[in-house]
Length: 146
Figure 1 (cartoon, rainbow, N blue to C red):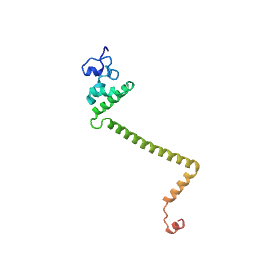
Figure 2 (cartoon, helix red, strand yellow):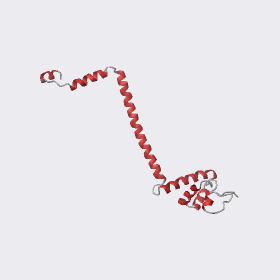
Figure 3 (cartoon, helix red, strand yellow):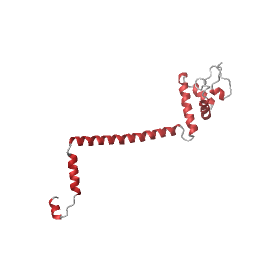
Figure 4 (tube, one colour):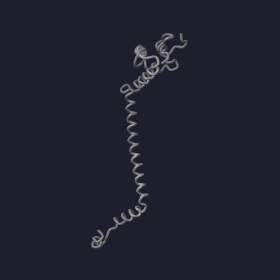
């Protein structure tokens, strides 16, 4: 017989047999883990689920049950789906922000390449913009330059 009862046996106030299905999955030092699972699924249902799973997968299944139960207690309406949806939305927002930044980087690279290819273009652009802002006082002279 195991000297210390597992969290499941402590919670259910019973002796922990040597072949206890809960002891590898719900150690005595983590009673909250079984308490969450028991509250959502019930002790006998958890036992039945663990018996239907190969021994080497039971601990992973117990961890999955615990996380699902924990989130169901935290958010009774959405549970795990709520956190998954929230994370999915954060990923979408991050992807949109990344696309915007990549577009800006491409724009600045193209702008830099254009300036390097045409070193005098800045002077010409400055001169042309100054000419556009210039207003002719005499309409006859203005018509000559149009």
